[in-house]
Figure 1 (spheres, rainbow, N blue to C red):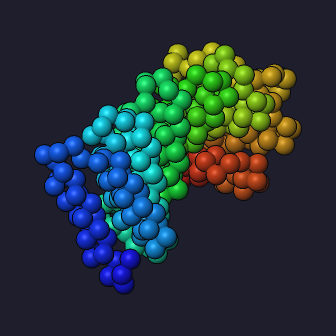
Figure 2 (figure 1 turned 135 degrees about the horizontal axis):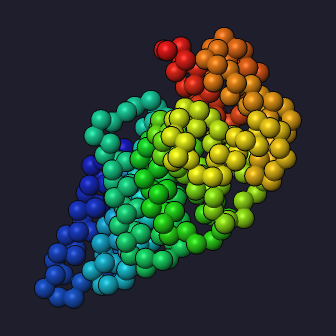
Length: 296
């Protein structure tokens, strides 16, 4: 590419398109055009111009679509999505924020185009949705990411993957301040028949306790397992449903007692000693609980 990368790219891109149009009255050599778009994309990648590379892969995808090669089309749309996402991350690393989100919108559109080429129950659709969600989380667009995790969750069949997806969605909803939805998800995880590792059960149960204190659901709307969780915790009953060590049990008991009594000073003190046992999302819930009492 010349030093004027934009002009060089536009010229090469238009040349490939022009070749296709000139051959329109004849049978166009789609394979040749596809290869030229891919070569241009690789050239752009080597020049560290991911957005240009993304456009080139879109050109290749359209070529494949014109001859009904839907798997090839999907492959190139995925390559384009990853390049556009790379361009967006590059802007973020430079602390340059684009109001129109051009690269991000292009990436999302290409991911969606790619997944639509696969059958409804294809694991590849799930993988694409989770890849998109993961990228959005990295870019701190967590509420957008949650919507793609929800879509992925509808397709996941494998037990371990389903548990991890639900756990990620739970934490994303907490990050987005959707505590009511997060509590519903936590209840579903604990009431499911899935084989949940003990460490994840413990993590979800702690989140569940803090979410319940924040949301204060009516007693008659609480699932039986949630009521039993509080009963077992406050009465020191041993249960597989709450595989918590003694330290965190005592801290949670203290938080519940301070919260119920409205003792904000003791709550702040207990919270400071409890944070070391909690995830980032759980610390956020604890801060929200303290803030609630401070306002009152």
